[in-house]
Image (tube, rainbow, N blue to C red; front, side, top):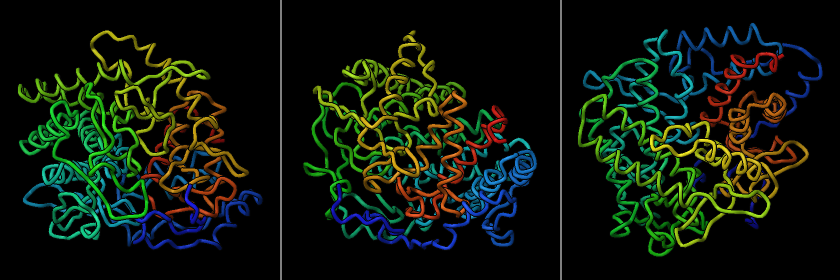
Length: 492
């Protein structure tokens, strides 16, 4: 796919050119050494306590419990490293004008993605009831995300310093503003803050986050989604980048390939930050429909009639379009979800490791959310057919090698498996053998580091990208915690 792609610790994507990737060659032998010896003496790799960004009593208590009661000591060690990684290394919490404010970087990139920041703190929500400081931290994330959306709903990543000028300013042809790191329009960037706010309310009962600024931001979300349905025009957003990487730019003047308007929302980029081929990105549109359903619930709670009506009408149109246009008939798998469509009849059959993905749909949405009586069994049947496809070699980005099998994507190149896809496979599975396979694979592919990575080579996990990728770390912890609660025998 990319002739000059080299399997090194450095990413090949131009987006990553500023990442300092450190090779952990010595650590690469640790995992097999400890596993072979059967010892519980694992190295201390977590940030020392005095240098941690934030400490949660509830998180530390959970780590101690799982490490005490888990028979697989390597998995327990990995959980203790990974689950708190977001809190240890990526959060910057303060009070601004009496309001909690939390800036969250992804790890080795000093910028806050709306998607990543939501996903990074999501697994901590169930612990908020017993840890009010943790609750304040997450409330601060919601408040910071509101600021970001109000600054520019089309941007995907932001700086804490709202006057900072992005290095992409020199290469990107779009409406860049100070304080924006990157302006790639991705539907999921606006869905994740809704999911986080809704989940926060459900876990804590705290409705104070739904203030005037939050409502204003949500109205802007609805407005942006409507613009990108493109019924009347292509809308105000366009994006081009001076780069040799095709996946980093949008064709045809920055508006993308044409679509036939049908109610679906156009997304110029995937959650991988790679450009779409056909702008109707199906997993992200499903996520949008589910997020709008959550927004409707909050609008009812806050008695905001205008938001309720606008979100309700939009959700109905998106959902109806999904019913008619999201699935295609295939010879090998029957009817299944496409990854991308254009409304003209063209479609792209694949899946990408980044979330939302086709694989991740049950993790993000409940197929029963529709109130119009659409048969839930039909949606679930479509998902299971799709799942068979995305976990097969008919998916062009499903890689199987000597070390592991899993899904990758164009972003890190061919033959590079993303731990995120293995984690998501486990989180969405109900089969003990499959879940155990995912745990075992993750245990044997962390290259002795005790942490997850962005991707690793299918034949050699010591060839990986991004040693500090907090989302993958925290969601690995979420996976282990779920197994601990529901299937503890798999951690023996």
